[in-house]
Length: 368
Image (cartoon, rainbow, N blue to C red; front, side):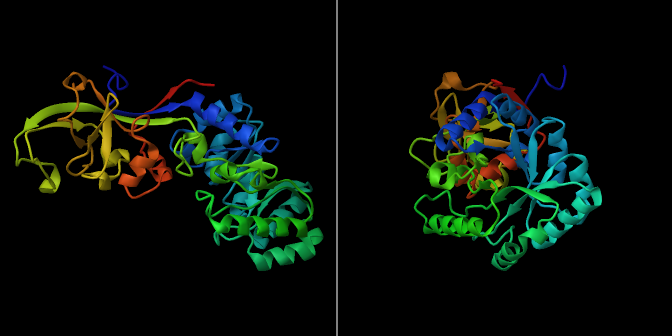
């Protein structure tokens, strides 16, 4: 038997749904362009496969966080523009140039370093420049923005700014006052600077409205099916489905315990399904006795602690015909939403996806 014939667990990634979510963003923000954010290995879904699906849908601009991600992505989309959010630290400049990666410059020091590289290579170098409008994370703070606004002709020597960008802090809440405050700050900053395309919105901003779209939007979690604003009906299609195989079914009597620490005791005769998925696969340990999985579209509580390789479900109330050692238990996907699974783990969908380890095979369906 080959090692691919038995899959204890899998993450099924629907590439057709990724492409559909990309096109949905295009409809919402047009005529603004839509980039694909594929950092963190495509939010755990596989950056290479996701980027190919996006390219087939017409995407020609991508964002990654790390230099290494940009280098790997360049092999997949050789002609695309790839922005590196981490910026242009001095020791990254040779690789940025070699792999034709566009840094998102986050400080005047990085601007100066990139300008020096332009002089040394006797060329004009493209860059995005990140303006902090309230995240207090990366990007030029107010005092550096003021300096750049006064001295941009000198400081941007050799640099062709292809994007001014900022980042919304509260786009998951369309009613947050901070959205309008940051929008005003971004518009003020753009008025101080030489003209260039602008980008402000990730997935949440895409849903707030066209005032936030500017020239380019950068959806991330929305491309992967996240319900960014917890709408009654998720505007994005389900992309990622995490399943584990049922390894064993057993009946236990009232009063018997399940799992390490005996944190669950049966209050009735109970059927337990033991599933091949645990925290070594990236399943959150905290969801024990809190979360749910689903078998054949029916929810079952996770009982006992999630262990390194296994999780246990109370399947007493599920139809017996759906229970077998060939059954797959879904931990998020069509029945258990990313948001429901995240809530059980006291976390966010981003962490659920990016926490999945390489032990979980990624299986791709429906390429665009």
